[in-house]
Length: 104
Image (cartoon, rainbow, N blue to C red; front, side, top):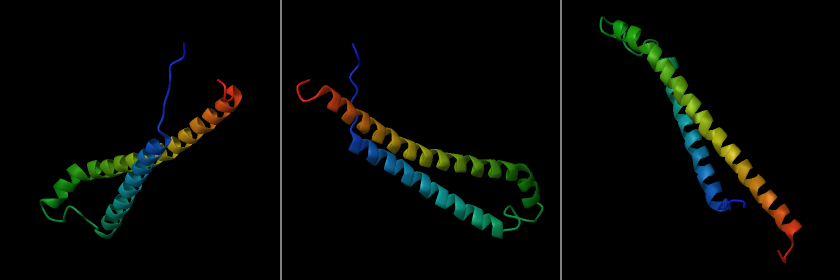
């Protein structure tokens, strides 16, 4: 016996659309941070406190920004793949209903 699978295509599309919007918003914010960082030569300061702090934290800051970029890419990709999966599910459902006919 096969398991019954149900998907609310409209609800799933809304969810995947929102995930894509969040990913694009994160990407936009990240671009802004990179823009600011590119104009500030020494974001941690150039004094006796800023230089050691930069030595301890700059690598972490770069890694964090890179990780945030991966999150944005992942959400955008999930949105695109999710829409494609819903389209395929609906297409398969239509094909199956044509094969089974109205009396099935």
